[in-house]
Image (tube, rainbow, N blue to C red; front, top):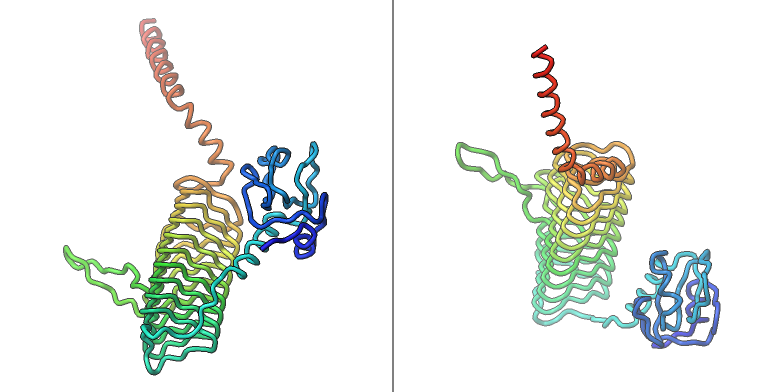
Length: 348
């Protein structure tokens, strides 16, 4: 598919600077731009590439002021990164294979309900009293357990497992290998052994949530583990039993959330962040990569480190940390001098 600069600008409500008829058929990174491709500039540290890129069209923010001539045609938009996402989605929709119908090798329980327009692939399993809404796509080898309820327009990729009784909202995406509703890690000490605590709750995933590949969300001991509307979870994340993740919170890979922790709305987690159990995180908290949080966070902030502290304090502490060997030697020298002074004083 080919699109001209003017077509792209019209779709994005942007404006063209340069040749409105230049066409592109693919995307490229700004540093590796090739003729016939579209790229974007959203981060100022990449600005120097725009003056030498060979890409035909560059998306830029409305307020971008070039320091020299730009060889490519520019399309100015309110937010270049968001505009790129819109274009990528448009292309994906055109490329997607529109699977339809139920494969003869799929297993669907007699009392399961399958909505209009659904696709169920080979060797997928749909259990007793399970319900799929309209226009869902269940890919091969997915497992939908008994009494699972899945809303409209959901995508369940291969080898996803949704345990019994879990609830998935509308327009959710579950990527390959994710596990929804496995038992929470609950064991009671009994002498020198541990006795399993039955996990009788479920997992509730609200509308417009995306769950990454091999991410696991454990069912609650009682009631529900809840992922609220609009949350986005990357690959390889562990959400423990009875956790609550707020609306539009995003988590990068390898985040781990311990049991019964409550996370607010619009929080952002870098990779490998770990949260202790039974704590509460307010709205609009940002966690730098590998932060370790052991207590409540009651005000919007950005934290770093383990145990996590305010980002500015962490930066100051990191600067001091680099000087600790010198400070240690200096302290040793000062102690020696103090001992010598004590000896002189005692002699007098």
